[in-house]
Amino acid sequence: MKNKTTLTLAGLALCAALSACNRGGDNKNSSININGSDTMLQVGLAWAEAYKSVKPDVAVAVNGEGSGTGIKALINGTVHMAHSSRAIKESEAASIKEKHGKEPVEHIVGFDGIAVFVHKDNPVKSLSLPQLKAIWGEGGSIENWKDVGGPDAAIERFGRSNSSGTHAFYKKAVLGKGVEFKLGTASSAGSTAVVDTCATTLTAIGYSGMSYKTDAVGWLAISKADGEEAFEPSIPNVASGKYPIARPLYVYTVGEPSGHVKEYIDWIKSGGQASLEEQGFVPLSVE
Image 1: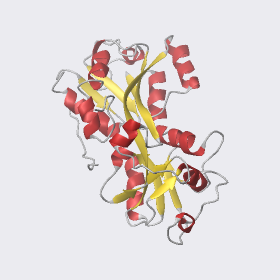
Image 2: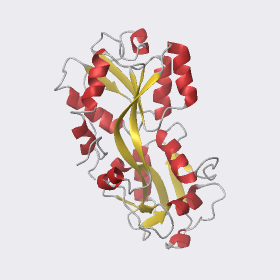
Image 3: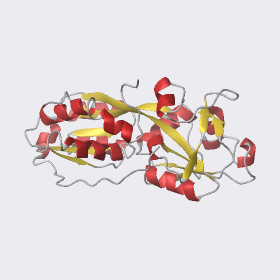
Image 4: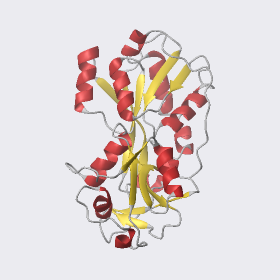
């Protein structure tokens, strides 16, 4: 998996009128304003950069402040679309319907695996979902690396804030319904921060999108149950369903998109899939 490259965008534009954002793409301005998932920030920037060669007169502004923040901006009418690494909540959908008189429309634009990161010198190379639950979940019995074949050292847990779609999905997929994270689980500002912490902390464990993998950090192969075969979070393993902590990546709009926004989403699902794979995600169609 390649290192992340910082992408700079020139000429980022805010909406000329917030009311245009309210209509989920029914805008006549040559700008598209987006907020949402931190996991999708780098690929969002890559899409925006690549789209310049397709529609040079359309400026795409991308922020990545968290899936919940992006959907809140969609509710408030300050963006044309929201990136999200989790499905929209019923309460959020109801707020959109109440405020705008339209249902939110979900667009799946790719797939992602949530990787479990550790220090690259950690001798533990694989864990099962039940072991992850015992490490992360309230009341779980695993607190020391020696309990899973590692050194005699307390496990330091790092994750994302509760506005993050990655936080919400990992909680659902690993901890299960009604189980909270253990007290003392550190909350990181973004995906890069989780990876950087695991790269520099011998006893750390953290979760984040697999596209944030760098050569400075290790990650674990994960099995669905104790004793079963474990798989790393690679594009083939996510695409085949072998990797157990995988999810869709979403774009949400208020009602069916039209105009520049519809054209942009249609392009993301076709020409934009190359940028998705380059950034370490799983495209909609994998040969």
